[in-house]
Length: 75
Image (cartoon, rainbow, N blue to C red; front, side):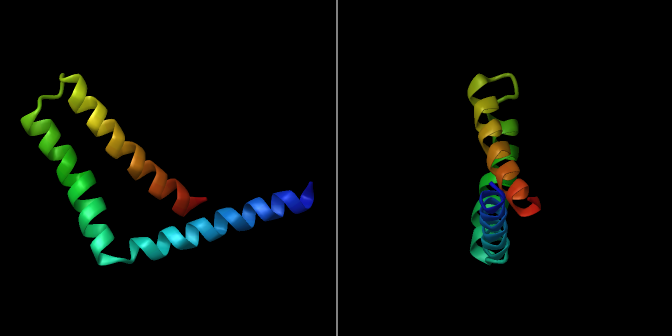
């Protein structure tokens, strides 16, 4: 069991290292972090209306990706 916990910890650390490397990539930051997440949320809120179910679903999708990235980095 202890070995399995160590393997899981190593796997999580490896994933965090890969995510950190990905975040260093200018194209990734520009296309996903700035364009898809940040501008996407702004566009959805301004042009689709916050009470629209599709808008909320699109914002939740962006929020989910954002949380995944930063949860991976912090694990």
